[in-house]
Length: 433
Ligand code: DLL
View 1 (tube, rainbow, N blue to C red):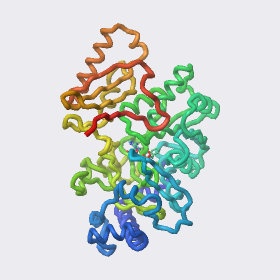
View 2: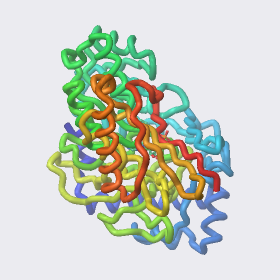
View 3: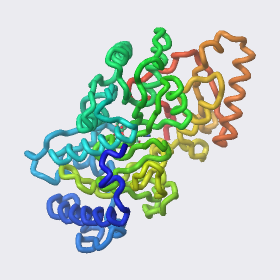
């Protein structure tokens, strides 16, 4: 079901006009009201009057995560502080959080974007949404919450963790839609199986999974374990949270809510805008944001844009499932490797579970060394050593051919690798530069 056909199935040229009007308005406003943007634009030699068509967006300077950190907490505010209704934050590796501040209208936009997202997975007011994304500063919990309310669905605000209780609630209330990180969905299925609970016999029929990278094979695994349809949903705190893009029943790329969030793909090195279909860094401009609007924000997420007609009837541009992040990309002996590639290869190998950890270190000869820890299915672990040895060799061979680098595989017992109720940690990089 399309939640808002007027905007989601809008004629593309009409949408472009709308985007341009919104962009122009935004640029004028931030130039006037936010000293940070005025300074940046002056330094780049561009002023609001230079924006005469949508493509002129490329004249505007980028905004980066460092900019957000340097202006913490309210340096990017574009409205009086009293207008702020809610804030969210995410902390990255440096520990300085990035802030998103929402006015009433910003929350309404978020509600709409998330209602569209849940509807993309087939949700209606008749559904019961069990929301296991964390509530709090993280945008997952409240984002889904607002969308489900806007849809008129029954929302169970579980938050993350307490898996046995999640399973009890799922059964008792007949939850039909599950929302959590894909790694937590798998973990919950594992706990259920161990406790003799049959999740397939429950009423669940779909799930909206995101907030971390996952592969097509992981989708198949979740769908098989729960007997549901699993949909990819994408977003980031800086650009409002979840609801930026979502999959529809075609499960073939994520529709971007581009009347709110204007996407571009750039070459991460040169900053040049790339044409549709070319892989690069995803950049967003928040066209209607009032609290903390962002102009050409560099997400560091890597994907490409697709503009073909979708069977669902939506006309919005699609982004491909993410390949990874420019900053998560491991450079191992000069080869670019995304953890998602390793995951993808792994799930195709019989006998392994999709729980893995990549440990990168620098060996005695200063060469990068990678250990890939992989959990083995329970029945295999008690098995003869020669079978384990064969499996280890097989994984090493597959990785070598798929990634082009040799890595050492260590098979570990089921449940050795730490489980996460939120975003899974897949990489430990011990290299010191
Ligand atoms: O993770 C927002 C969110 C919540 C999205 C719930 C989906 C569901 P942050 O904590 O700010 O916000 O992290 C944003 O997570 O830049 C991506 O690198 C990654 N990410 C988010 N969704 C996906 C996805 C939320 N579907 C960062 N696939 C983003 C891969 C994702 N990576």
